[in-house]
Length: 370
Length: 247
Image 1 (cartoon, chains in turn orange, yellow):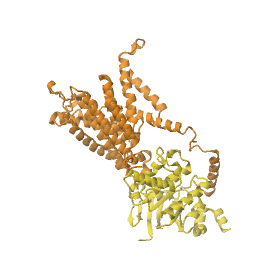
Image 2: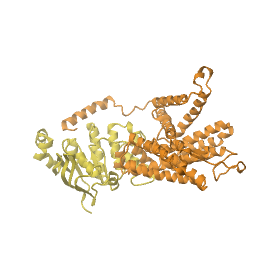
Image 3: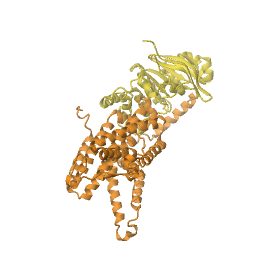
Image 4: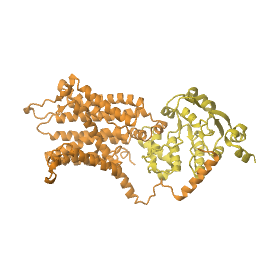
């Protein structure tokens, strides 16, 4: 193994291939399709941020909107009130989100909030931020903030991240953010941090016994995950031009963020992308389908909620048939196919071991074992 | 360098009204294998938990390598070179065997490739080399026990606490594990405190044996003396065993 091989993994090559595809993709796409590709990258990016904390560390965040919203509002207020570039605002927002993550992580983990209660805690925090932000004058309360459009003749501004002549630039920005996010995750997965997070997810007591400071590493995962999500929030406002509390800290965004990594495979590097590739077009198509259904289904036309029903159905199917998500179940299937069924599953005891094991039990009973 | 590696000094641990460990005192010497035996509920695992930092004892102190580690948290105890295994093994089930062991190996390095090399070495040492890349959840019971040892070994400890490594194993598997534990003591120069129920194994393995009964230390001596000790026979081994040995 050369020293370079040590740092360049198979996942780096997959990322390179994906990046090349996405760079040239818009050349052959309509503007609607390009917007779809942008959304895929956007959700893959946000899903990846959630995956660090929810997937690798196993700390299920049901309120990731809190980080998203912190990022969205930070860069917006800095741009609108202080004329600070969103590029800088993004980083400051990420910093705020990381600090916030350390704070809530410390409180939650120090007091042993786990599993369902941790998820509920994150949900409650996001809701709290939604209500508080609706009261804050500096955030223009529940009315929200519009990013003032540049005058027509001003054209594009990279400094203000506003593009009216070439909206395609947003696509390349989110592509860039996605690549950076993935590089961070790939680095993490191959580092001490990644191994420690997986160990914590699998068994906290065992991890602690091997010298893992579980509280510290869980907090680190929340901070990293939150910082990345915040950058996604900043991007969202720049691209859409508007933010209000229900968008920034709402339940909808929290759920959308975690859907893709869960469907794609939590705790896998490519799970969020796989989920985004499947769900994002599907969401668009079901929405479109319900808007203009074929003649024999005309009764569903324009009925709110039907597309969400399709969505729900798909999630149920995935959960039943692919409990480890697309990537997780795919890898398992691939391993099984490759071993050609020759390898006997080791945990199924053979007759021989059953025989000797009963003997062992008898032996133990004799010696007074428990 | 003092001969004593670990001192358990008048340690008492209560759960409500129940005194699980009652005023236990003993020294563990560098390089020895000390067996810890006693009937169910004698407080063996509770004592382990006090030493490894899972519980803080109500009274008494634990001194490891000249440093008071009473009430120090588990990961900090491990950082000082004292590592424990669990009676109910705790593999990181969805990770490969070598990745499991790497978690332990990261105690001494931040570099992934160094941790991986160390882990492969340890996996070979415990005899899981052929299964290094398998998912840990697919191992047999014996394999999981070896993995439990490997994870702990990878932290490069000075003292290992082994909690019933042989429980649930066949006699053949037990014999192999005994040999492995011997090699851990002799080749790797690691001091061992071993809880075990399989009498034959613990008698053969230990330099000295400590007997716990109702949370109290009944006796601590060489296996030969322990096997002939009246109190111990009455409390734990039973008349049948005593008879077999005197015959």
